Image 1 (cartoon, rainbow, N blue to C red):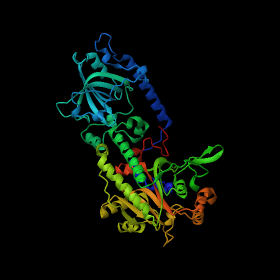
Image 2 (image 1 turned 120 degrees about the horizontal axis):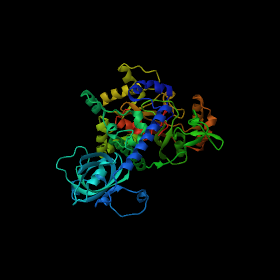
Image 3 (image 1 turned 90 degrees about the vertical axis):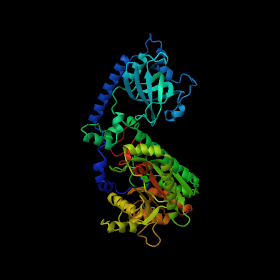
Length: 549
């Protein structure tokens, strides 16, 4: 998921056939399925309307009627600022015992015990707390209020006022080890009675499901397509909440690191003229009568920024690919983390930046995101990533030799396919004790036209790939900054130099030696957490088969 032009799509799809069988199901949403979903939604909406008509509302004869009920719409239309103080569910601990609090959350679980008692578990982000309702005149809680609470549908948004107390026994079903003795409860927005996905089902690990099946119990297994079709619900699971918080930290650390190294953040155009970077046009469209497309990467523009005198630049932005790669690690749109920098003497200067960047990211996640990593691990178990303080660098030839010695033949001067990458990853882990390494000095024939050839052998290039757990996350290289050589290489690669004339021309004004790389944010998170599919780390994935939601 780099910002370099992709390898042959057909080859990528073929080499990933094994992954597809294990990791992918078809993402095509048929018209028949859409109609079925529409009928289901309509039925659920009617049921919701019927239920709301039947909901026990505040009884006029109930002296505590003002302490519960559905909040009228006008009250939540930014009517007033009350000055009330809200407490985050995640901040509730033993120190809060005896304190009155006001919280808001989704009703994750509702359990009536009797006419006079009920439990409601509220969830806010990744945190949950148990709320207890006990009918009592002293507490201002009536049996009607208890009945109102038990009539709520799961995932409804609820406000609760109450007093924090300590339970007699440790709580297993909530993250917070305190309870709220409810004094007031109001429903802000009711969810439909029957949700398309049960959150409890969507949060189970595969191990839990298999254990239940061995015991003769049949549990619901929520498939990937179903999850993505109803992504707004799927995102509420603890693992997904943790995944995207991890992703946020990776992106923030990327920005923080580059700013500390005097890089300048830039934003390159995504709408460009003609074909994309001299290659096949991606997502063709018309712009005021001119042929245009969405850029495959900021590659050419970050290079031109170097020509513009910025010395070091980075970018975080969307990247578009129209390749038909239906694999576990490809998307048609992803978040690109790109960088370009002047080179004083050697392109290893770029490799050193990558070394420092990723070691910093890995350390930060392990030290500061333990809660999130443990949460992901509960649903998707994985071993912590192994890496070295100083990142291992191997030449392409050394990597090929390791594969040959292990019985894997690679086409001479060819690129590594997915199977070879994974095997090399296992071999490197066994020999060097790391799952993060750099492979450099690739054959020139398998790299983009703007890659600088090696000084001692033009059959090789000043380029590199970076791997995590046996899968490529970065492609990078020293770039050609000489217009004559750049034109020659473009022509040799079958590219009409006139289609990228403005790009080539920018180097004729005087350009320093430079190099850079691109990495896909989703792929980094996927591999760091050892997830089996990149769609798990894309908020709303776009692949060759999916355009909604």
